[in-house]
Length: 619
Ligand code: M6R
Image (cartoon, rainbow, N blue to C red; front, top):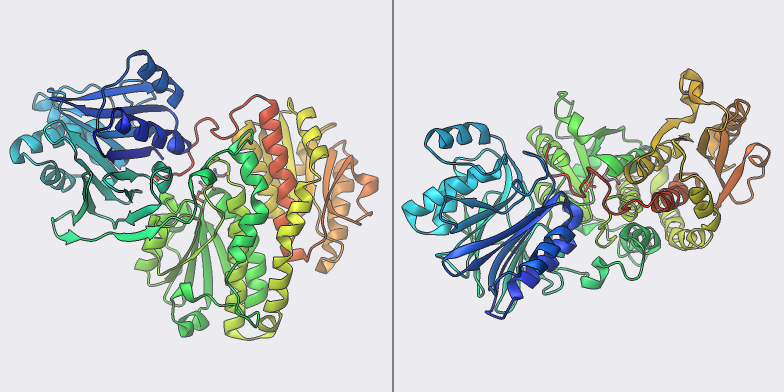
């Protein structure tokens, strides 16, 4: 939540403003309640900020241009303390001389006490934010120590919570100081210029060389260097890395929305996530896991923790992981996990799934799992993010940057990565699925081509979506691996089209939800392939008949060649044939396309739905 940019570079016209505004445009997906920028301009810091989307700030700057500067910071906000107003937008001035400005991502948990104390001492607040408390504390500390880095060190010692803070002071032109605790921050290393960002998208147009920071570190950037220290002043070093995608990957490339683009990128996302994970003989090789093999062999329980779409990818993967490894696998929403005294010990493997790698709920669950002695593996799409850094091992998905708030390509990449992990564990532990792992990998390798084929036949789905633009409620049914797909299909629709949508296990219908069916109620049904064991296909076909008999409009997602569904379907949406456990990688595609098209037909902002942000860095 909240996007943060910082820049120091050469004295070239409006370079600082250009870099900061470009960075904010790329980070706007992280929060878009308001935006602001601060540039060092002679004896003071010049701040512009506006409620609403970045376009409002851009217009304000066009109307009254900002000065040329070589140092700047910028912020795009997802409101926590105080509504989305001009006053609450960042940056916030500290003190009353206009010399110091601060931006912040996260929450200062003890802000209330600090604010009360400052007010009692005569400080006047201009906003309702927790951030302004930090700004005033910093201004005071600066008066005492006369050095922005030292002042930051003094102030962070008094803060509780999670935060990334960036500060500039007019008496230190050419310097931006940043501090991070449990909140994202990366440094971009340029030539004669340096950058700070919530993620690398902030500066990807200028450099692909970056530096990860640890928790509780401060970094001071100038045009020539980035100096890292601990909160206690101990010299430290960031870990450098090269970003393996470029600015083009983070642009729309002619598509109407990032979501549309990202849906279409799924063949590549799945393929890239499978790449390099087998040796010449087809055996799985996950060197990157760096957890001793003996330990993985001794695991007696797996707990998957994640939120939102990532949680549904974990739910999907559970069926396969248990089937292949015979290890009991629980999947839990990360925000519930740590508050219920979970039974976790050193033989438990906790697998977190997160596209951003910054979701605070998931991060806290991982930390809790480690405290309990579990081994932790992070499945993550973002290099250098906090969750992989806090985990024992990481398995990256290689979906490329996902910008749309609604997660699509990360979802299919996450399922793919979970499957790779499950097959690897099966291979390590022996047993019947060890032998089959290579066969399943071959089937997985065939999936990207099938997704491409499916994406090429989505015209009817788009037509249905446009036709349903005024629908007020849509239900989704699935069974076995189709159940989490029903939940994910419903989430997509709620999230971007603001339509009441619910997913149910088809078997649960008769226990209550069938009462919702009335004439004309649209229901998507994810039908397992006819080869699915235990006669599940027939059971779901019966469920379709049951709701159709009560007037439902049935939109059936079924395999090519499955004719059993035809008599009971108002629409049949065909997907290529695949082994039952791999079907979710296909059946989710029409549901993503449906939601995207319907939201577009309603004239909504598909990429930036109301009240949401891409990366949820508060609990
Ligand atoms: O970055 P993460 O994968 O940890 O994010 C988890 C959820 O916040 C995320 O999947 C959210 O549910 C999406 N907006 C859904 O499309």
